[in-house]
Length: 326
Length: 250
Image 1 (spheres, each protein chain N blue to C red):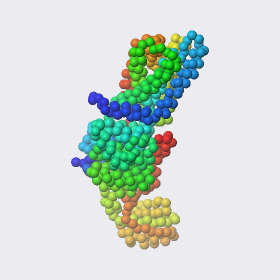
Image 2: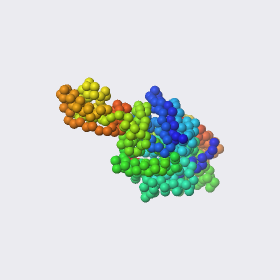
Image 3: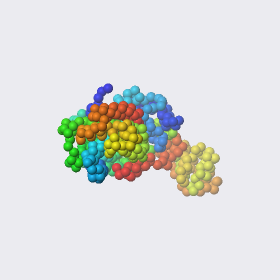
Image 4: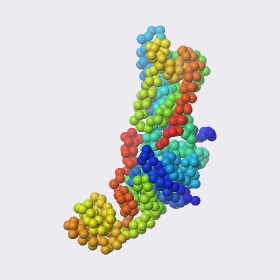
């Protein structure tokens, strides 16, 4: 049985379609990633699958339960780590977990045991009785992960688990996620960090403008590009892109800052052609790089834009929390 | 409908723990009622010979303390929405009614503790003599129903608005009129007619009148009517808050 089955799921807000007839399946034990820029519809999809938002159309089953007909069964069987912080900063780590356990109907003995277990997993045992407002961003995120696992769900949703964290803490969180995967928990993760999707996920769905543009393992997706990526650095990238297009080398070269990049099947033969075209148009090419496609190239291929130009949406929220001192 | 005692308790526990964890807030919340009681009560007592204004004011100030902290407890759901904890509660397999009930009981517990503290400090301060010890128990019951009513009023408002910015607005536009347009500081029969009319329609007046009747033996509406109006208000707020909160989303 699949852990999650999504069929033509749709969400519209006053005429704006946030999620547009999305379909996918997640196998038991799989680590599945929804990759896309902010506003792609990843979080909205998660909110629908976790029963916090009612879909406008389509159907979905989580652990075999219909998200519309059986919301309570869905809720009991899943764990969620939200994108924005949701721990209570005026409670201790222990109380946050204890109250969570009670809301999920765990008895006293089970709760006490599990609190120890999940705190050990995220290495916060020593901080058990400390008030969460004294925690750093990374510690809070670890506590959220511990809380999401508190009631031993089979399926864990992680919405941008490393958003706004420094690279070292991010690596640390990846370590926990890998540990969970080894325990056989199914994980659905959203991210706009390509390295994260590439490093962690068994399979990735690339989302943009509410649609799924491609699904596959990171390897598969890269292989599907069918060639290498050529990156040319130049002082006149727009002009160069135009030349490349007109010379029939690539139909849609991508320009970012001073780099023009495009996919090429027979890349070895393409390099001289590019140089020739550039010289003929009197454009200086400063350097040419030829490499295997990365997940970012896959992303550009399917969405026509780079994911890096996005700013993390959560940073505003964190700033607001800091302004309030909690 | 199964009653989720454990889950109601969880929400109650959170409110009470948060309250215990912020002792400084509790102390500051006692300052204003004590200032009212000392400065206003003491000042006016010496101005009006033959009328012990302080004793008259004490039940009103106890009601004020309960009023302020109960509504704040309900409306603070807005902060839970802003800081995410509302998501944690809404995503859990807990009925919305249980969330409302837990919040109400939790908010009422903390509000009553503050009200009782003011009462305990106010009795020696004003020198009132409670007619019968049993009246203290009845006063506690009245405060409890009154407080639950107000927390639910707060929850209703918080379910209707989303923005944090409206928190202070609600506090001022709801609490201040409820307090000033009541008999908390003035006897109804001494009011100008317009204020008298409004105060008679304000449920807060009945809670104050009931407390006055029980604590100093002065009542204008009669204890029975006082209890009836407060209980009726509670039932209306119960229906409104559970309905409005069930419509709320993240």
